[in-house]
Image 1 (cartoon, helix red, strand yellow):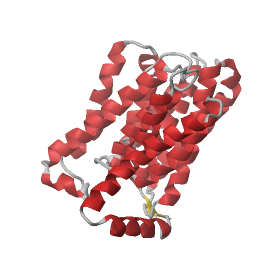
Image 2 (image 1 turned 90 degrees about the horizontal axis):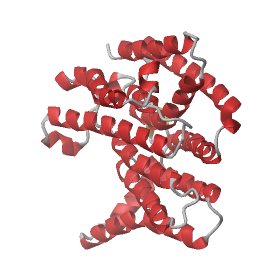
Image 3 (image 1 turned 135 degrees about the vertical axis):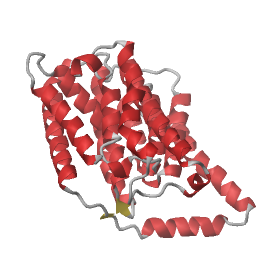
Length: 317
């Protein structure tokens, strides 16, 4: 399995949508009891169409993320492992198999990542700076805690480029613009003050609680994921300085991205299953890095990957 997705052969990329369909087939056919309801606007659409959109988004995000990792040399070598691991992590349990806010926000955050990585030694960075701020703002429309990633974007600019007030201003304008348009719309409908007051009140009263219960299948999955993360961090630390400068910087930014993904939980009223998928992007990188760098003769990585697949399947029962 690792060898198949490790190689940059196009066949591996074509398998990504197939794997997503296999993982999501159960909820595409029948909605399990107790599954969270989708957005209100989805109720007007046929359920199969909503699930098709969700499956298409997971596949598109996996392929796009893999492409930007390869294009920006984030892993140091081309591979389709990130796409494969992303679809696994985005499908880790039944409660996340629906068109949830993070699934939509992730496509905007991936574009923001792409624009951020492109800032490295870029002589004409104005458009990328504007687009990065704009995409993070759009992500926050679907999943408000994503607003915290703008702080990550500003820190990334400070790491990748020499200080320029003009560039920081461009990024801020890109971020503020969607909220400006939204405010104009509410102003036209005489709801500007009430909407902002309710939003500020909701933000100020947030007290995040863990609202999900972990059963035995989920416990073992979290345990294995934590173990894989520790192995990945060990391999990441030992091989960090063997990479080229751009690869090291991109990996550092994804480590910082992971920190902000965890911190974003504090902007939520409750921490639910679907919010954990915000970690799928950085975890896909670090797990892929481990599987790429581990010795070829050992059977342990293959065992770990198949264990992850089996535990995900167990959580789908």
